Length: 195
Image (cartoon, rainbow, N blue to C red; front, top):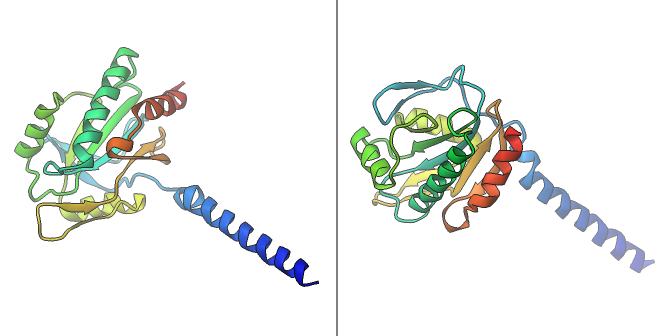
């Protein structure tokens, strides 16, 4: 009789853990969408509104120009992805990258432009570098659960994910930043969305 209770209890625990993992991996992010009521400015100083955006698959990166770790590695790998998508003639028309600074007070338009130049990124159709005030940045990051905090040093602690959105600007998948950013996996996932 005791053995049945142990088996029942162990099964109950296993099911609970399984449901918890499913929630954290899938259900929690269901319905996450890019907010539409935000306006930021591009690296060239033009206004960029999130309302009525053309339907495109988007890869969203939150970064800051002084980041010493995952941001530059991710940007560099996105640069290689951009080149692949250009070869396939989908970059700009069907695929767009959004890179949003999480340090708008330090990341002036000049700083962002210098960051782009460092990686050979010109202000082109298909990859938009954005800067807004802190309230707009936090509002944009919140639905993705992207957290960041300046601890009073030059290093901002932040979540390390990029976000893949479908043509309706709904979150489809998260990809780790930095060395764990697998550009082949991201490429294949994006191509499946646009085919």
